[in-house]
Image (tube, rainbow, N blue to C red):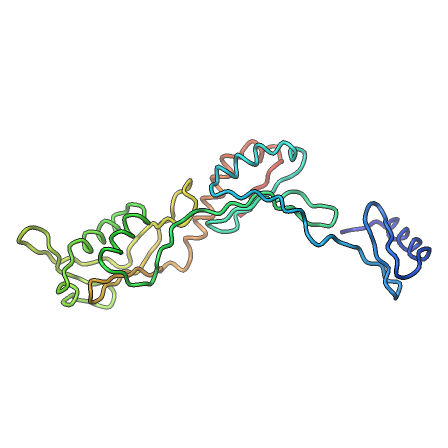
Length: 247
């Protein structure tokens, strides 16, 4: 908190008048004078907890638009991560911002790097990933695997090839692509789920696993998608200077 020269001089005068071990008030704020005559601002420990919790970006937009009591104040919408957005008010008299809204996306728990059996992986790919060409290839491979196929799979260290059943009495050798492009549900449902690379591996027991392989670049894309959604739906408030969206 910045103070004018006039305020500082007034504090000095009052501290001399009050003596040590006293509390004085200047411009609505309280100051304590310790045993050495030092003056320190007394700051309340916490702000009032008025945060509204939501699970969607539309919830954030609706709340920001409906806060009539904040129309004359700036509001700051911060995209903190692919699955978290928070809205803050203006600075208070102590240089702090009140958190008004907290949004956390409801996303499924996906077991990256863990080998799953045939049925578990099949369900995971269908329920926790958007449809992509590589996802469909993996589903075809997993759905038609036999135990001996995995044991006899050829592996060049990068891609694996397995023999799968393609008809009532026919089989076919399929090379599983690596890396595979998949789009898991890992950010708010209102925006496009980022597609990124994964390493897909199989092992004996008809088990398979996917490993993240993009170095976390998907997070930047997801946060950009969330910011674009909020910017588009709060354009009037942004253009008026009432709302600022940051990521």
